Length: 203
Image (tube, rainbow, N blue to C red; front, side):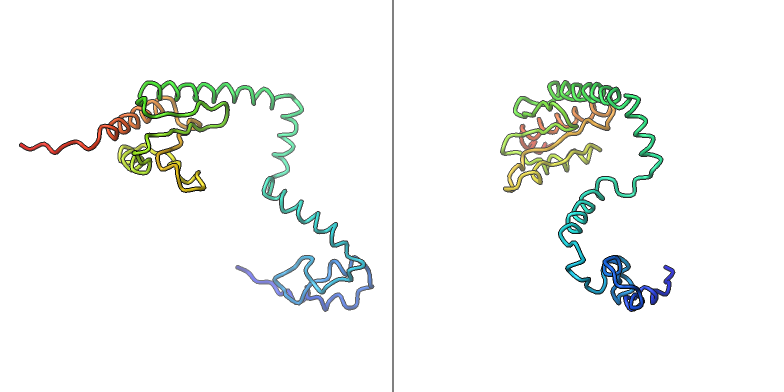
């Protein structure tokens, strides 16, 4: 990393400036790595602390929603909205994900045993599954991964540490063939778990 001399940024460089609120606000501290409003303490009478605090809080909240958004993309999106295309796209998205949701639910009805239950979401991208209490979703996950199928175990979503018998499925990205295969595999693994360990075969 190239280092530039920052001595000229020290607050002592402001000593010959004319007194003003701007000078107080923009004075820099004698720490070259901090080149912002930090700096010798300004006169409180000239420094609108509450107003600056509000601006700072708004800025910090805003930066996580559109930090470093490029300007051309924002203008393109603005025109997209003005033409009424956003509303149309939203409706197309709803139809697209509704079809995928319905397909996954159909596969679950087909392949999952009745001992497993799940919600039928009205939005979003996920279906939350509940297994019998004597089953562990983490163990099911390990067995599913061995067959190249993965899901999110549900226990991290419970603040009290419960939910060991729950997991979450997503229908947002997987294609129809992958969903059918994955649900069939998970369903068979659940059935195997309900049946208990298979006895050793003695020859």
